[in-house]
Length: 84
Image (cartoon, rainbow, N blue to C red; front, top):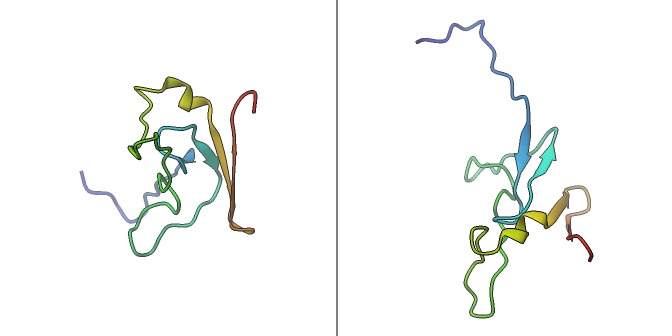
């Protein structure tokens, strides 16, 4: 089906996953990386095991409890986990 020029798409919710396999960060507005066309910092970081391999949620289900917040204004990421 063709969309008419009068139709508008609305994004109801927007989530960024700064750390692969960890909790999402809900955002109202978020920049797009002009080089890649992707959301800035989305899945840009990963936790690795002692051998340097990226850890995955299916092997480490508690990773879903790790939260990250990116503060674009101050160029920092804050990471937290229950009990830490």
